[in-house]
Length: 494
Image (cartoon, rainbow, N blue to C red; front, side, top):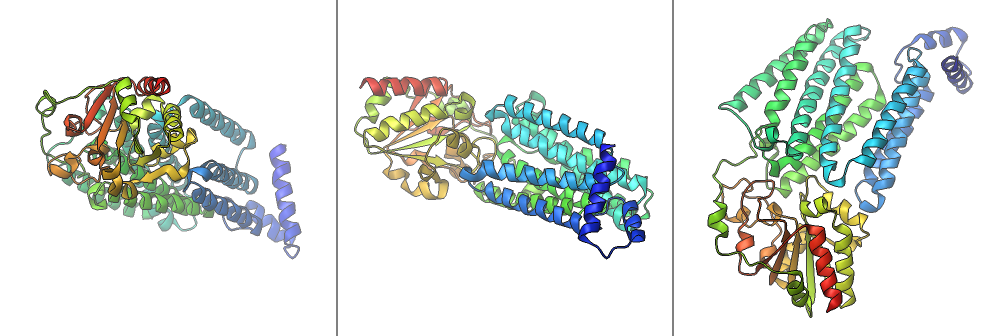
């Protein structure tokens, strides 16, 4: 009853807005299914949703407006869904409401349960879910066989199944790597794997072309092939390069959605998917430049270097200088400039608020405090910016790598909290290293470096860091938050 009333109301609004439309035309319009562009009111709704999507992405470019950007994007998606429900007579409103309630409940539960340190894994899963959702929608539509242009819909559905399934399986592997599950943690490959992947891709494209007959019989084999291809594309990639992979998979999920939009003739899905696909590719390019990688290497899974890492005992033996919170507090007495270098360890320890308290004490003593932000510190782009924004760190104190690197030589003390790979000088000295060529924060040029870590364990790249054994480096071992709390207490006692 509710569905019929809403549907009739929508048609009445359409009649009011278009008084020249006669009853026969109105009856025909009511029989059209999935009428993207079939009415001016539908297009207005889609236009509003698209504008909100664009404003949402614009808001995500700065921490200060990121929350509002998320909210705008969510409202845009709600409008798009409601427009589809109002104009599509096939949709069961009770079923749609149940679906939205289930999805909303799951979203709220995840938002409150998932820790900030697990957010990259969640982003990877979201990419995968988006990809497989597009594949399922396109597959159902082509198997139903209702498209006006069978050839276009068939090929588009094939591409959606290919891209969406690659995104799904690849994202699951990426989430496993980010969560450091034993079966995914280390890169895995076999001889000629790239040739196998290339062959699977060519076969997948051939199946997409064969789907132009509209039968849909190739769709399920195509999806199974694409799922295997997604696994093969991501498994050889090492953990240090996962931020690039996450950005690329995000782009794939958008491309899959755009292709699904062509299958069902939905303009807003094409727009939203194109926005996500384009922004994901831009972000991937930024990440590639930040890590000195090429996009071609990302696409063909050639990120991981093959050289053997140096032995940790050889790097550290007899060279580690351990310190204490009291000694660091005395060292900080009278300095002029301190640079904080946050890393994944800060996120794990949830130490951002204590870092802010330490900075407040130093600033009260007349010390200039800045924060050096590496583009891929943590597990995904912007990870450190979000954490520090949560602790109300002033935005003008966050310095990007290109800005802060030339000034490290004038830094009295660099305090590194849980970062490893992004400050590892071996990136500049060992061409066989897994992080060879990756731009790093030049903390080794500071007069004194304080490394706050639980142990000498390697970072995500799995290699030792010779910075720990440098003459100007002092190791403050312990949980990041606890060590900083002890340092704050020692400063207050001085």
